[in-house]
Length: 114
Length: 113
Image (tube, rainbow over all chains, first blue to last red):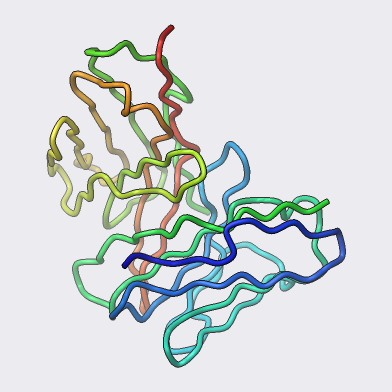
């Protein structure tokens, strides 16, 4: 099975909080979150490995995450803004290897903020 | 920060035509990747390039990793209707704990009517 994301669609109101979930490919230990606004390429939010945030893109602290012992992950966004409306993508990778295994993505969660 | 310039932004194809798109960057990447995204789905990996100068094929798709490691192109030969979609290039950087991708803005492939 590939990367699984839930829910597929979500509608929230400005100011609310949202939690998105991701289950990585079996055997993969790193999880990456990306935001894809309409008409744009995905933008890197952060990466989790061994339950800690390891890399972070240019996103405010309203965006936070968590990784569980089973390697699944959550993306949390507080105080939602209209501009947070986007497709949120999750990807996973195996324990770090020297070749640099390409990322495989889930189908994303479409978040609409009204 | 790193930015990828992908061109063209969009193009129309007629079945049977060859298609070419490219990506340039001001930064060097360890790996270049090409993804295709259909509506409502996540990006699907098409081709991965690991070495400067490398030319790799996947069926009707051919991609090359530029010698300077700052550019790549993707060719699609004898296009078919299911080639329609959005194509993204991505440069991959290897960090201490994992990889990070920087994406281009995408090339939209449409069918000529």
